[in-house]
Image (cartoon, rainbow, N blue to C red; front, side):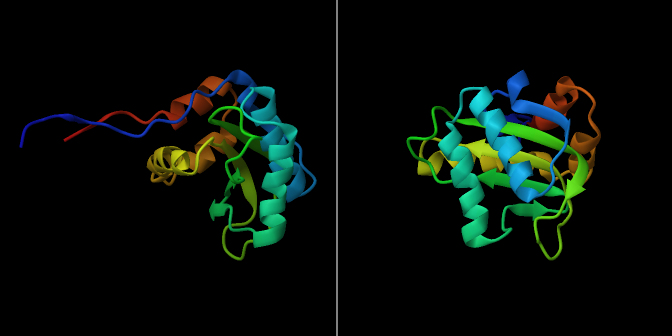
Length: 159
């Protein structure tokens, strides 16, 4: 076997307006709305997409809380998505989503994708990042947008 750089899935670009640090949220709805508003602010989605993200939790429960302290807010692809993108919101005070094991949430990642299969690449890239158990706390404690970007951009893997 020879040394080679393995391709790693990449996240969509993360604009400054898509990163909100130390935000205040009274409850999970506020937290998801902050992530959705950031997707709207960076041109990835419409306000209706934010409403759809909240409805997903209303309809299906807190399944979006995928790890201790981390929620992956999203809705189905549709006309409310203008382009693929992510947002990252860190919360000044963690909020409960009602998840039995992973509450409270300190970091909310918003995900907007234009096509049903497009989310696989973004979810795979996020999984690579969050395989490092310290990544959630590092993002939650970040004080600059560049710190968040650095955490979300894992180094290339050499085989």
